[in-house]
Amino acid sequence: MPYLPSLVLILVGMVVLIVLVTKVVGSLRRFRAASTLVGDRVGDGVGLLRARFAALGVAFAERRPDRARQGNPRVPSTDRGRQEDHRG
Image 1 (cartoon, rainbow, N blue to C red):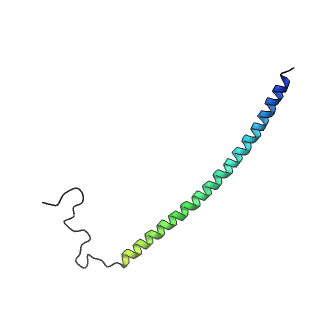
Image 2: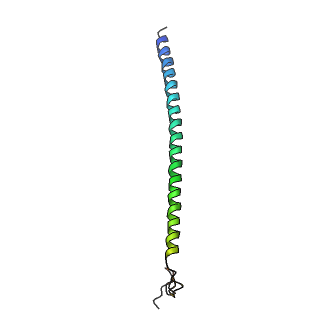
Image 3: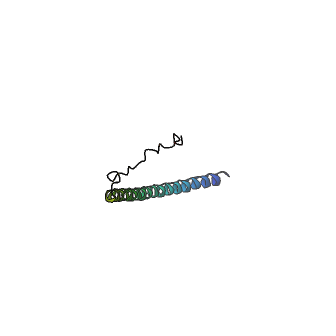
């Protein structure tokens, strides 16, 4: 019977381990739920900011005078982009 104290210690250790694991898993679930909530709210805020900046860009573009009506095109005809070289 000298192995009985060892078995009791192993059993107590397993019970303590199971209790700790359940508590840790529960706290991780709560943390995941809270982080998801925070991430969703931050994402919503970022989306609203992007929409406001886009609306401001449209408002500023509407206030600018249209250069095409004044005879100045937006893109000069000599500008052909990076594909071609217009030197010659």
